[in-house]
Image (cartoon, rainbow, N blue to C red; front, side):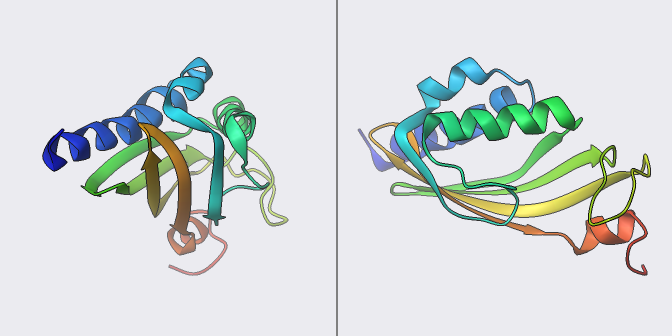
Length: 143
């Protein structure tokens, strides 16, 4: 398989994760897309460690069930076994956060997620999100 075809397949795995699992809540696809021993190497967005397929399902279900989360892919770049996604997530402040009761305000966070693909499955992830715009949108810090 050419490197270009491999990069396209790897990007498609990440795209399906965001579109079908995160945005549509299709948890049954996690088994198809993720390695059994998947791990978040570093994650600034998850409230708990994400390990294995069950960890991915637990986080995806929590986000889908508790937030009207919508993730938009801004860029996908792949090289070798790595895929980098620049994303914007949008949701409504429905739950207490950092001691602030729900405001009903819509807010966005922007981030970068880096995935390692091994044998056609998402195997590792590093997640970095910028929370400053969210804090401004919620009125927690000045604009």
